[in-house]
Image (cartoon, rainbow, N blue to C red; front, side, top):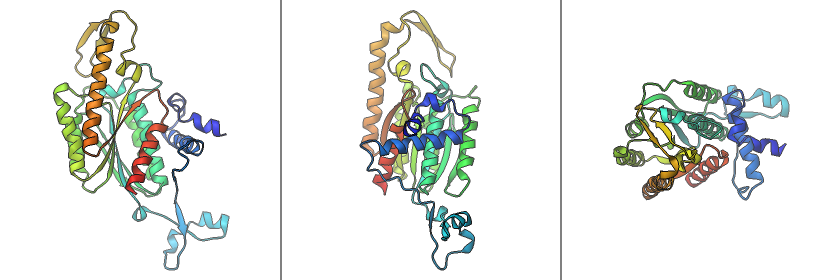
Length: 308
């Protein structure tokens, strides 16, 4: 049973499941099973969905299903008893639809991770919300911890995966600045993106992330790429034509001739973002769409524990 649960951390397995709701639940179950079997078993993943009834509590909040099973009164906990407010901010720009050699596209990977984060947050009675962007922010679901809200978020994620990205371009810097302005209450903001921008906009993108911190938000950036092709340019050693999904520009080259320089440039880019984020108290983590989801979920728990 435990080995079966751990399989649900594998993106190729998750991709075969029929619904976002099932994916989110099984990723989290696999993750928790892994925590119990790993050096990280000391992490506390407490799911406080109920608390004992106290005199003065409203009777309408008693969970009668639990009473029928236990002969004891328990109160359902709602948003006002929330511990943390969080937003998952998902990049849905055209470049996120790229799959490469991975089992899923970057957008699918990000959406499945988002779903698992929402499931984990809401199980912990944290208020969870969702934003999504391409050229600008186009989807907003404010944080809530009320029963049934998870399903609304997961349905929204399903829609984002199916969303037609034709005709849009990446404008992560402007969109993240918009996110900073829209979130008025201090929150944990988890940004899932491939950070694809024009080179000229890299400083604007860093400025947008600093803007989030200036607004007193805690921030995690998950940099999602398909590592084999996007980090290491592992394509066949023959002339190939590459096309920009946003501009339509094309270039023909032989990957082997530029592979080492390309990989060095990508690493330099990631290192720069990591240094800048670290300098401003932002967590920065690289994710590979071929890799299990537990790395990202563990980083979230690390962050949450530090904020407790």
